[in-house]
Length: 251
Image 1 (cartoon, rainbow, N blue to C red):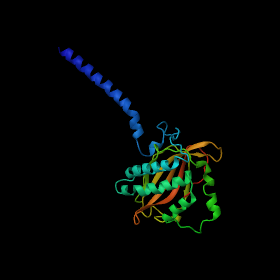
Image 2: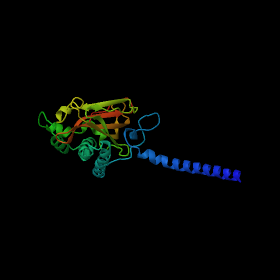
Image 3: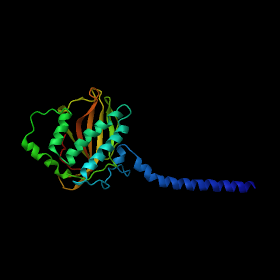
Image 4: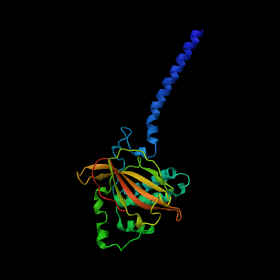
């Protein structure tokens, strides 16, 4: 009788283990898909940047609603990524970063100029007609380029003057565009104990050397101005998955 009870107990435990394993395997993909943060833009294999196809392919008829979706996605992720204190500023960060992204994939000089001036951009001289007509020509490869919202993320790089450690994500190079003195707000985040956030969007670009398409993660960096309670553009960093070069983006 005792042996029979022991046998039933062992069988019951084994069944529980099998059922648990089945549910774990079924739940694993959804758990990985829901994972946020910087690693969301990359594959788990060898820590290398993900090269899977970018799921959004805009055209002239869909780009506007897709940019609205981009803004909404950035707002929701910024509300989490910025932390409790800065969560109320998520909409302002989303508005600014979406306008910079728009200027890259669907350039409109008048709209971009209005955005920059509204953010306090200091122009050394009025825009010339040549500047107006050539706007976007240098980044023609990014016009209506495929991009990803599933792997887009928002992270803090510097919090109140303290640099936060970031994971090694396997990028081979990066290109940085910085004209921060053209915008108001803290100019030295470390010394001025300011906070810097980065909105990162995986997007397709063309390598200047080889002409091949590259999956690049574009990081739009902003510094928080506690006095005006606004985010001001600081720089744009393009993280490259292969050695090569791409053109700078408008800032």
